[in-house]
Length: 307
Image (tube, rainbow, N blue to C red):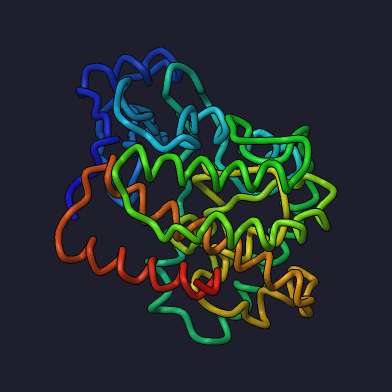
């Protein structure tokens, strides 16, 4: 897979000027972090030994999906809300002009640590994550949907608007999708009316975005795709393409799901499939690996919507 066209890289001189302005000391080392797929990120080390992470938003004029505009503002807001509620997140040091500077976590991503974890250790961490997510979902917002849009006064309005936006993006970027997608979502949209309170959903809680240290969850990163809506939307990423495990469910405090709730989770998984099918075009992804991923996402989309 090729590097994303959304990556905007800064010269060392700009990185040095930034840390001198914010932290008052010069930069002595920097390394680009390559795990992220959208923003550019650097780990910066200053002369006094402090380590920070800088995220750089895409350059102006790069084609983006509708909901991807001004994601960094959403990320900064989500970090602010999560920190205010005592959740484990980095401290934001600066947010301006497409730049987000924050303290560096000292641990490692769960995805990196996982091969060395026993089943018991992994299960305990999943329960702890469930507790963290329960705290996350205690945070409410002023609107349903993405802060930057699409959003709406109800969850049905916001979510169907999100689907319509990605379908319009598919048309804009020449991505062919099954013509029955919109109808399949509309046929199930009445179930979204069960959601009456817009809670904060990270919506990208896979293991690479969860840092571990000393056997515990040290911090949650990358809430740039956060939204306010149905807490069950979180299931789509904490149990990506699989069933929700008992350990997470125990920590979160919800083990049983109604048929309507399962259908809503399927809708959110279908939406993520749509995004992952379409986003590769403006980002310039290509190759056999990308083609294989798209075939997988299309198959899962059909499964979740009964196409």
